[in-house]
Image (cartoon, one colour):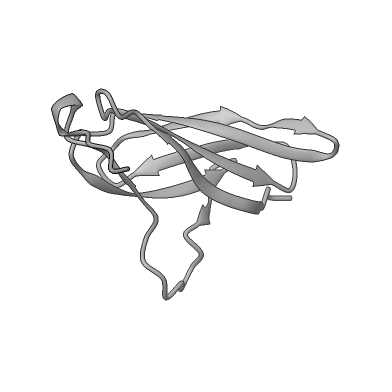
Length: 107
């Protein structure tokens, strides 16, 4: 049986210093290998782990280009589970800063 997405994906982290990496979190309905594939070729994968019957994965995404917004897909055990087929919503994206000089924080 194919693993399914229970919650997520959720963008948990973007490297604000160099802009080349991010981390995506998911919860699956069973043990799996979770993978993020970006439209520009960046990506990463991780095995899920279990806590109290729940299966989670933190997927490190590397190879992102600073200063870009990149669409991504989530696969569990090689099967695409996100975005949902036929979804009317825009694609999920990872937006990276241009670099250390471009980062600004508003209070």
